[in-house]
Image 1: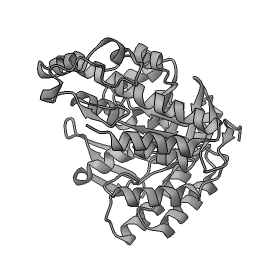
Image 2: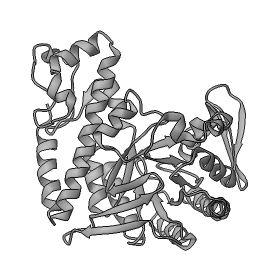
Image 3: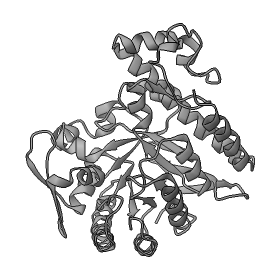
Length: 377
């Protein structure tokens, strides 16, 4: 299999490392935070803004794009990249998590999953083979296997069943992906480790994912309702099970604390809707913790959102103005807050990469979190 991931440097004090993913739409420096563009757009942020911040890869959602606008439209547009005018890389998830969130409206069988659309209630079926084919139509630079995502608190028996089905689906997904690759598709397939919060099942699922020998491996089934201590324990436990030479991806994390914890454990990729979702509700990141710009005491606060941030929002607009935009329900508030939050996380990860290269990641993490956790307003 052609290598596409190169480790550039490892910090000797922990498992943090920097690297490069070589993908069809250009190289991606890791560790990397990927903004989520569920419907083929990162909410409230333009493609030009994503480029100006420096993002090299974003995430889109197979489930949502499959339902709307549908594969006929995207196929006619020659793929998702030209359809949304994004010339850099796209990772697409399999839709497994979205189907998981529709638990009352889904049926999981060996052959695949049947679910009812959240849009109009229509019935649809997704197989592991079909999900690979959909993502090939999208032109995904990285695509995820269809998996069974499980929630916090389920039984061992249910967790084991999910691991077994996920592994069976992986075998079928890989076969279809290899057939697509033989016909010119250049995107990479990632397997997903499940196992819920049972360590022997994590080991079993990781072994099956490693045996499948996909280009990369994702850690699934975290940040699904468990507490922070449990998350950190199972993140560390699962990460060391994975091969060093392949990119590791933890799905669905976006707080500075979780991102830095993941980087320390040698995780290369992560994504989350958090920066844009919280931006739309008036919460923004700062180096002294996240704050609400809608509070009454912002009315006469003419300082920037974050004095330590050099993004265009912090350079040009005040907290008082942002509060005014929020109170008057102006769309510009969502646009500016989302831009700032994405810029903040992108810069955090960029600074983390620099710290790794200089063998000082742990002190960087400690200093950042000391200010971030201790200075929240």
